[in-house]
Amino acid sequence: MFTLLRPITVAALAVSLFNPATVHAWSRCRNQPGDPGYPTDADWSTLNATIGGRLLKVVPSAEACRELDCTEAQWESSVFRQAIPGSMNAYNWEQDYGPPSELCLHNGTTCAQGDVPLYAVNATAVQYIQAGIQFANAYNLRVAIKSSGHDYLGRSTARHSLLLWTAYLRNVTFANQYLIAGVDQGPVVTVGSGVPENIIYAMAKTQNKMVVGGIAATVSWAGGYIQGGGHSAISPIYGLGSDNVLQFRVVLANGSFVNVNSAENPDLFWAMRGGGAGSWGVIIDATFRTFPTFNITAHAVEILTATLDQTAKLMTTHAMHVGDWDAVRAGQYFFLGGSTFNSTLSVATIFKDLDTNASTAQMSPFLNDARALGAVVQNEITITALVNDAAEIPDDTSGFNTILSSRLIPNSVYLNAPSSVGDTYKQLLSEGVESILGHLVAGGQVAANANISSAVIPAWRSAKVHLVAAQDWNDSLPAEDVQALRKNFTARVQPVLSELAGGECSGSYSNEADVLEPNFQVTFYGPNYARLESIKAAYDPDDLFIVPTGVRSEFWDADGMCQVSPSP
Image (cartoon, rainbow, N blue to C red; front, side, top):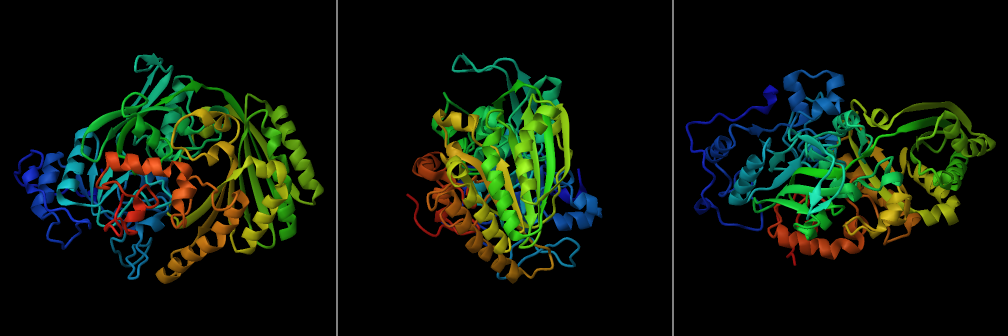
């Protein structure tokens, strides 16, 4: 284990759990360093002894890399950063941009703690999480839950918090049958909440199985991914990730360890499938359906445009052809990098059980129409492989600054108003947005699964595309300018995407979205929010698990430290 994890030295201390008689008086602000109720060094040492020396002093990733003398390749490696408890892949979420600001920047000369937790429980077993939760309740501490740090809304980190770090909960067990309330659910895999997707795909291959997951190396499949709903290139075939989870095992806010499925704690099972990451408890593991593996052909192509109007026409043309692939339930990722001048559209499409010729034929009508616009079609390739191999990415790029804004675009837009898609791209590029990511991961089985009772926002069931605008910046930008950029990005982009998706009642995928979304209760949760609030109050009445844009977070300040208004 890295020296940066620095286990706290302990004297000969009792290894019993904390006596409830020592609980400090609760207030509507969490304790932080300097408060009378904040744990003393002796208190932290007692916790460390209780969990067998697994309490870690956490530092920002830039400080960790300074201590480790990281290479640039290591700094940008999600796999490497996953072993650093304070690291976030988008490391702007480690910073407090103020005012006053507390920053710890890559290759910087100073380092402040910012929004990075102070301590972490290296939770390699259930009892260590329970001990951490009991300690947090006893001393009224802010809590954060993190596995990999693949998080675009800063929910896996928190200022002055105790981190419950699940990165090493890595059990994986396959079974050909699985009973819930005496009913066999068929072939499954049970996955610890620290297992990254690339490991799952490789292990599933050895069983001739595949699972519904994303295309990223270090997404923790049984963590925030599934609680947000979880989209996949094979979602049009098999549904969302949350449509295929059968059970969670969870440590709740009161420290109890429970099964959560359709028969046990069914209301919480409903909430944890789409009701938002980080709000419900600490997932130990989750059990998912598996499917027989299969071959795919991946078709990739680049399309170049020379003017803004040509780009808008290209995206209108693409919108007109999105329905071409319904019959084969293809998944597709299409990324536009551009400006008010030239742009490049990169399109990668996944076809199940089609060979190269059939896949190329599926794409030809769109590409021919793109050429008719005068766009340049280049670098067209196809690769046929086992789906596990195609999805198993060895690493992700990390260590950058980015924020997102997104909407789920209804299928009706593509059927009835494809030109509005081109107009939206034109407007976003005119607003200075340089990166727009499209995900054809809805329709098909996602729509067919509308009868599943879960907290997945209904907008998923009528959507065709998950559309994301991204804003990056480099570390030379002053903190006050970063704050202005973030606010301006929301003000400029959110209304444009919202209008395309249907206005005030439009929906968004809460895992890839804007943390400053002005009406997140509607946009992320839709008509499910009132029920989610009720379930949250039942299982976490003191709001131990509060995350930005999570259920009941509107009653707390931006840091989740102080309640700002009474909750129901």
